[in-house]
Length: 167
Image 1 (tube, rainbow, N blue to C red):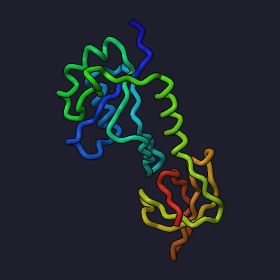
Image 2 (image 1 turned 45 degrees about the vertical axis):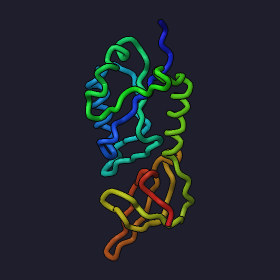
Image 3 (image 1 turned 120 degrees about the vertical axis):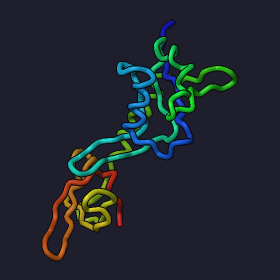
């Protein structure tokens, strides 16, 4: 049997907003370190900031294979997972092209377009809730260079675009 599809794994409702690393650890503890998976959450540490963008909550995708199928009966034993998505008694899968499209969409969601001089609020990290001015957009929209003016000094900081909102 050739496997080119991905299984849809539903996360448990018992855990509110599990972190990317919690989900990743859960997948590898159930299916092993060598399983191919896609968590529709971007999570990246950039300096003192963590850039996070959630494309889809409540589901993860695991590449279908015999090793993964063998573990399905015990997946709901893990506190993080409700189980594999089943409809009409049949395990639901999605094609690799769908997962590739979701990966592209997630990557695009990280990029924001801010014009130079635009006033923005920093949403997280050491400069949380401070208002600054966009000096430049870097890495094709992934990072925003923000100048924050304080009474004693000016701070110039690269901030992940996901951590900045227009004021």
